[in-house]
Image (cartoon, rainbow, N blue to C red; front, side, top):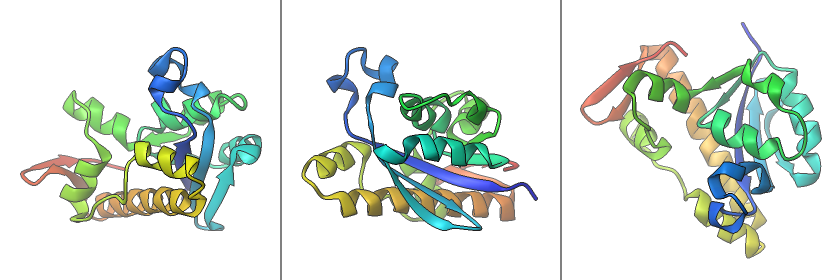
Length: 173
């Protein structure tokens, strides 16, 4: 069984606040990252930990994210080389987009597959971070990692996920 780690990242800034916007995700700045793996369970990482986080991710066989290839890895690229992460990536968003030829929001996937919901949005997390509500950002990020794990568990047990109440997608995650 490959060693797997789940990852989610929250940022300090939003796209309209950095030169180049979405073309410059590396400038968003790491606020909080949360990982989960079998050996360590949940771990929280902050900006000073970014290089260590990248090195830690490189030790795993598979890095499971939702939109990690476009977003999370790009944020981390502001702190060091992340090229090795892409070959280890299982990005649920990318896989679903390939299968459906359209984007599927994480909230829609979670609602349709698990009947649950996220505890906020990335934009709210930036506001909480700026307001000094660090524990709230950590809880939000951790919840996203929990939901990511549950979606993958569901998919592995049943061989599919739901992207809407009436649409299933067969996956082999």
